Image (tube, rainbow, N blue to C red; front, side, top):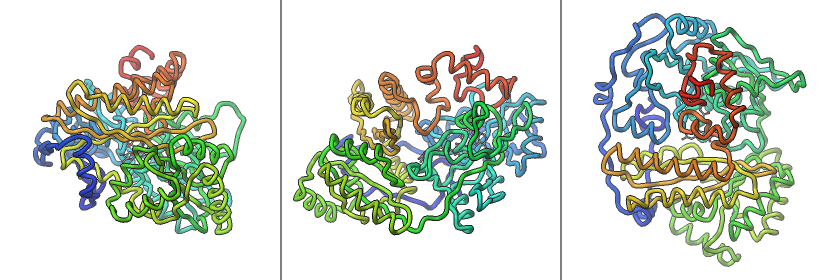
Length: 538
Ligand SMILES: Cc1cc2nc3c(=O)[nH]c(=O)nc-3n(C[C@H](O)[C@H](O)[C@H](O)COP(=O)(O)OP(=O)(O)OC[C@H]3O[C@@H](n4cnc5c(N)ncnc54)[C@H](O)[C@@H]3O)c2cc1C
């Protein structure tokens, strides 16, 4: 059963090691956990629905509570406190295109806001009901969760839009294929959500971001049905797939998605290497990417994150041994950890490893083999559970991400981390922040920053701390002309910063598209564009 007020499934845990607890105490000071509301208390706060129960949707309070928030830190604080403020009035769980169509027709007739809902793993407020006079219907695709067809010759698979990551891979595996889209939220996020939020998986280097995997699909809009055919390529005007990607539920409900799949690889290994300092590590990964080295994953933890990872891993003796070995190889305090994926035939993997070792050696780096890589692989989808363990100790943790070109990357990382570290100085509070690069391109890279702070003495003040930090970090991102999001999307949290990237003309074009598909503004208003931009025509 999925947890109602935390990440993932009940009974799953990722305990904070003794070393992790000491590390946080040393950096942030001792902390006090805030009291959590019980499910009963949270249910007591759910107001009466403004919709009548009817065939096709439910007004059950628990179902409404469970679909009221995503997984951002403010969502987390709302759920843990039991004060969510806004709830969907009803939740529909259709199981076919026809049922989706009927729900949209009913929504238009009754003037109901519709929020398409995939796995509810958004971290930017995508699926949260906002205040307003119209009742809200959350339309969950979770019953449309199957492989619909597979063309093994063209390597195109059609899935119901509500299919979550593990189901996608399990169903393809039976036929000898895989998709290879592994966002960290893989356990719960869905095919439709990936397309609608332009998501990126950990092995996008080999398999591509969702933009490359998404071949076409079917959408039910308020202006009718919309089919996007899966073609190998086309120069027949603008690409309509691109229009749908990142539309965040504003244009319609994606009911099924055609995806480009690959044959299962013969071999896959994850290795960890260390490079003496950030400058050499950046030069090393740039060389690998710009030479188009066919790795399936490349992740560079900057020095502070490398230090934190080695401490948080919890195997103090093994880490001490590793660090002694690295020192002998000239790799000391400022080192960076590089995690990389080698995927392909046995021969390809062997060739790749040899090439990688040559590039690493040229930058003073050392490949330590697959032991730490296996550890990364074992916890690659489990680390989100750590948030709960830290919460119980009184610490809040959040992440943010962007992308920028190589020449501005070091200053951008510095500006983001500094904005966070100094973000609560007026309260005398410290913030721990560190970053890695996880998606690299010829011209630049994504930056992914994790930060921790102590909970304040109330939910309101803990939320106010987050707001301060998020604002400062977002302003630092915009000031460096980096994107406001490389992979999480816009939702409500990033909407105020979208104009800096798209410009006024760009926002007007997005607004015009929303109007075209949804003239009455019923579909997920206030997401992607702010509510007042929606009203004023951007
Ligand atoms: C712990 C954690 C780790 C994460 N890691 C990553 C990561 O590595 N990479 C990454 O890209 N993201 C990551 N995310 C963010 C999130 O998982 C992605 O944005 C994901 O793509 C959302 O998918 P979902 O199915 O949960 O969509 P939801 O959260 O349900 O919805 C997201 C948006 O898509 C719309 N939508 C969903 N389904 C449909 C549909 N069928 N038709 C029309 N619109 C729809 C919704 O209206 C909403 O606007 C992470 C989130 C968490 C909590």
